[in-house]
Length: 151
Image (cartoon, rainbow, N blue to C red; front, side, top):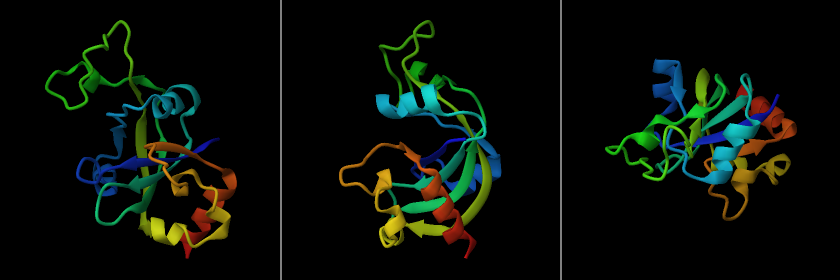
């Protein structure tokens, strides 16, 4: 099993939206490295730290899991979507998505709080210049965060 931190803007899809819908397609990823994580590494059942980004209260807002194998992101074919990619075709899609399933909402664990814990010092999301929307989380980081969230 792998673990991931996946960022979502709550104005687009929040942890409450995920809880209401139970499963959402992780659409709109337009970074090749993040896409490759979904396409090549993520597996059904992998753990996800659902992270609110680009908002007033940035941080881990809940726990989810990868719920599907990767498949073409339909927004890349929709000319009315902000994620439209005119170079992508149904025969040769450039962008993938996976479905993410709700596990539980948690108290917000802010990025400021995450920075306070030495066991998380190497966490990708805490590195200077880290802007990827999907990043791997180590087993040790996952376990430590689960302990924090249990308190």
